[in-house]
Image 1: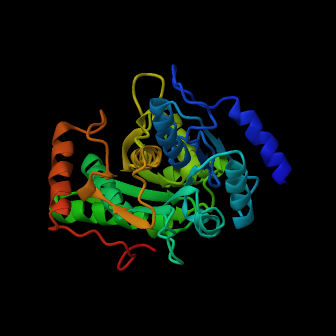
Image 2: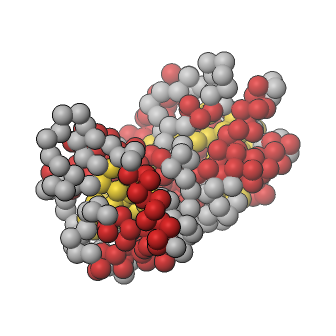
Length: 351
């Protein structure tokens, strides 16, 4: 298996990123790498957003950059991919996702000269001096997306499709519910949240499975579905797109990055009402730049949310009125100054 991965790596290396005019040789310059989680590099969500940040840093600095997709989703699969990148000279590797926790914990001990970042896990077993752990307050961006959705709909029903039932996805769900409830209590909306419409599909890479869940929900009368499920969520978005093209007034809510373009219907419009974002691209870019510039601060855990401008919804979306955007911005300020605290647990919410 390791031999197969190594062959794949060498094929990918032919597409590595170089900035024009760089005078450094590949042997002298830092090489930037990433290992994908259970999704794909073109999931238009978590993996893609992370890689785009790493690739942007590589392009700006004239550094070599690549990624590997492991053959499976076990700790051994992830560690093998990290090791293959390391063996081929990569000394910065981004690992996006909770599933990397054990592999990163082992890799940071095995390769003390390797700079690692893990996104969405705090490494409870200990963060090595060569590792930066990054987590987000997903509940805050979920809250803002729920608020915007309720303000847009005014009445009706909303649902949620998650990928794996892991902390980061759960927090999106719980925050979204709180945002809808806040709108109902403070802005006069009347949006329902039936527990049967809040589900986890169990995968980040099952496009067809996500679409089937969306079909069932929309057929039941759900007006908007928050899809926090990577590639599986793209299936939800595709179904929303099909139905809007057929004249139905339904929506999807994106995740991780601004997915407005993912919902593009080919007529200048999108089925994406808004997106619950966390700045995975920005943090991946920042850490790759720090690694290259000698300012990488290993042994740290970064917790990022609305106050740090690393979580929220897009500032503008043609599907939201300026009045809704202004109301959401005002509530975001209340989160920033501590007037509103968004729970990161399911207390009183749909689990």
